[in-house]
Image (cartoon, rainbow, N blue to C red; front, top):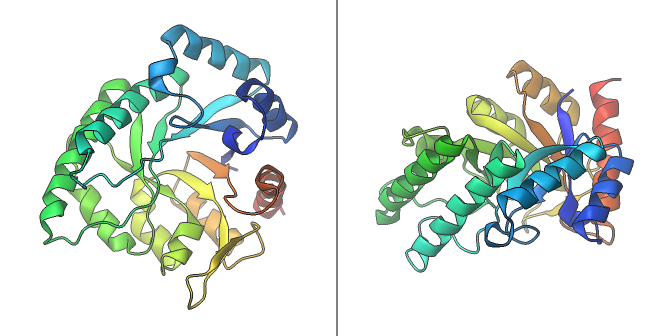
Length: 257
């Protein structure tokens, strides 16, 4: 069974109290948001070590980290500022003991678009920065996963992986099993969300109530030799933390029938 994390950001309490709630929910670790919860400019190396100590007190590990950029990684407006923010977040992730840093889904430029070359340059810069501190940056595919594979094939300066979110794939018009098979050698972390797709784009639903076949998905992850973190997440609804917490038990029951 893969290690399962919960996002501390979902708990409507300060971070220290959120650690206790995550531990009580039975998670193995936490997913940390390095833009809204913790900022590199506000957290010293000493404070990062103290946070790791508090995690240990609750029997938790630092799992994956996320950095939801406000724009894409190829739009020229304020791009230098965004890249600097990601590099700082990679350094903070290393201080916290997080092995990956994922970005929110964004539409990739076509291969022949001028922005494609700029995106390749930026991703190589980030891969180099991540390799320097031992943190793997990750794209979150939505829709055309073959294009994601093409883009990542052009990254040669260090590891650059995939944060696989089945709901993002479904809502982007993709097919989960086919996407997993395409990206199996790039998987670094998984975000466990579920969704129902329809002509209007679809909607996120409780894990186990949507179109994701979790038994097959977990079997494919095992087949691919996946050793990373899975984060139970929920971005809609009145009780996101409760829904994500219940997803922990659901996935464990599916993995160990």
